[in-house]
Amino acid sequence: MKTARMAPAGLAATVAAAAAVAAYTWRRRQHARRRLRAHCWWDVPPGLLAVLETSVDVSTVELTVGASGCPSDVEVCVFPNAAWEARVDVDGLASLASLVAIVVPYAGIMPKHLDRLRAILGGRLGSTGEGGVALHNLHHNGPITAEMAIALLLAAAKRLIPADRRIRQHDWRPRGLPFAGAQVDPPEPMVMLDGRTALVLGLGGVGSRVAAVCAALGMAVLATKRSARLGGEGGGSGIEVHPPGALRELLPRADALLVCLPGTEETRGLIGAEELALLPRHAVVVNHALYAALREGRLHGAGLDVWWSYPATYEEALCTPPSAFPYGELDRVVLSPHRGGGIGVADLELARMRRIGEMLSAAGRDGVERMPHRWDFGLGY
Image (tube, rainbow, N blue to C red; front, top):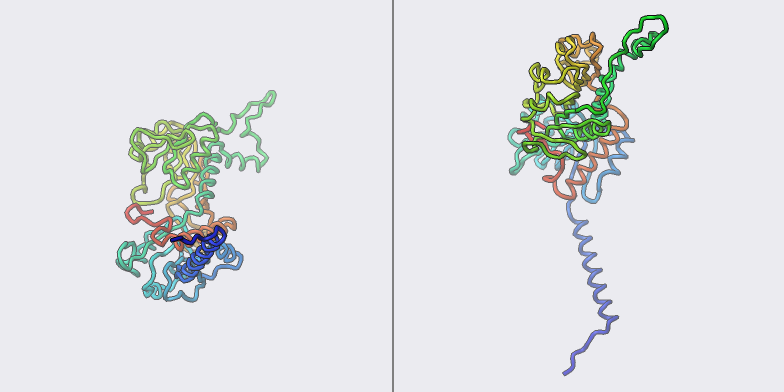
């Protein structure tokens, strides 16, 4: 008995046909698979909307936008901004039975907003069980915030603000020019950063960039990181990484202190009078310093962008002191009205739209439970 054998050409045709059927079946299943339903709860301007729409994978995400309302079957809701309470229908939010995640597209989420969300969603907020709603933030402003930290460091180290003020009045004395037969004033003090040591508190999206720039400036870099082991470990590019508990041992080694930590109960008040006293004399501090230490000359300078008091209205924005202490009277301080996050900057808004699109695409592709930047209620960020 002979067995019929298929000719090579016939076998190839059969394999090709089977592959075509499999590919067709896969495409049908992919097409039939339900896409993630996401809604941006504000009227996104046309230019930004174009960037957002091109950043979203429409094969896995069904995106709607608009402030007038939210589809009842939405799964992921993106809030407009930090002041979302005035622009989001909270009653409508509470009724979204399919909601599994909320994205607040900024790095920080204020405690009062967390309390408001808890009041609206109750035990659903942060729950990993059935009906739970995860909370996510956005880290799109890490680069511009790191740039501001470096700008403050350099401005404070070089005393740029008082020198700028005096040259505007045609006063060249901060340069320390020698003139024959005349008394010479000493130049405005400066710190040369090359060969000095920077201590970066927090090695996340902002701190890692700050540490890299400090290293590029020729500084030895120490850093603290929650996941670091005792004794220090390599952080790349020669960065020496320590756990937060080593802070008091690290401060005496630091010529520049850069605080790149999220504002939580654990980090609030981390650098006080005792910690500042451990710094070498004439150290430079960025983002947190005590008025007395600066006034008495125990620090070379400070750059401040995050404050204690903020205006709540446009009228208050014209006359609200950022602190109970008159930092503005000190030449040693560089002051910035919390501009590090780059709110309203065109480039950053484009980056925000791209990052939102990438997050939603990741959720549509891999599942909402794998969407990045989930808020940890225990850590507070």
